[in-house]
Image 1: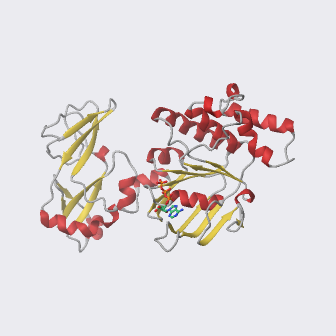
Image 2 (image 1 turned 90 degrees about the vertical axis):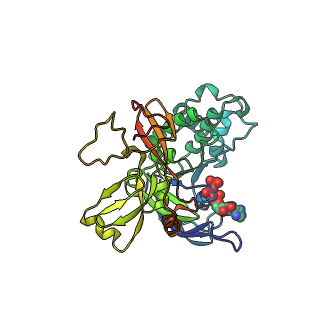
Image 3 (image 1 turned 180 degrees about the vertical axis):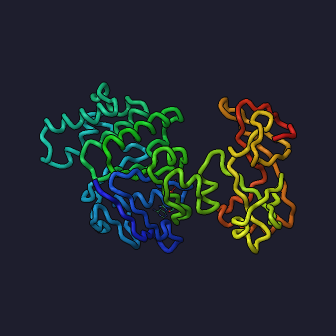
Length: 364
Ligand code: ATP
């Protein structure tokens, strides 16, 4: 096993904008690191540079204390699992899993190959399918074979590139748990690329959030959720997403579209000299006062609900809001971090499933 250090990594394709721009991330020995971000943010490019499938324009890639920029992929001792599984269709499941062992010519006896394939197959519940060809397997089973091939030899690290994106939602959930269990059991350093923030939050010891090739924040899931460093991370992590509301700064209070919120001296220092800020409020901080009696620190307001979605265990209510045009024009500058998404014109509140708020209701 090994640590992986990315030091000021840059990737430029031609003369264009760098696909990866000065990214530094240290992945500890045995750590499960997630690379997450919207399409085109450079996460696959970064992974491909780690494994050696892409040249590094600038910076140092260090694996197990050794600089590997100029090492061929086969000399890096990493196992990669691809989105499309990349199985050999003419080989059985057994031979697909055994393939990396056979590549290391003469290193493993036939008995060792059998023992290793059986162990991997057992861990992934593939024993019954060892004689089948990939065409006769389900998507989830193919995914398991691809993982079997990755774990069958003693790689220094596992690299996953969106391994679950071809599976349906239920299977994705199951495989997520299996990957997590397998990684903990083997304790192998793992880097996992996804654009799915549920995968990112549930699998990773730490999560690195990328936007347009630039690292925004690298932290534990809890820290990302509770202490995002900018509006982009705040809006990207969390489902339904955090609400962003424009607020006018007045003496001792913020004036939001629905209510006024008093603030103390500590916050006063933060908003000093500003007449407008964007306030982020997670949907779960809202409650239906008829179901959950308000506490001492709550602030009540009334609003018209546009759409509701009942999910059984919770309920989302969408509430449109308007900000006056003078506020809107000043928001442009503050919005840069929102990645051109623009200020939202509705907020979503995550209510108790017992709430009886209906579309068109004037309460929240
Ligand atoms: P996705 O989730 O859609 O796979 P990603 O975050 O993995 O996206 P990359 O595939 O790493 O993004 O691409 C990052 C940027 O580099 C994109 O703007 C992409 O168009 C560009 N890019 C990727 N590969 C090449 C290439 N071979 N030649 C030129 N540009 C490329």
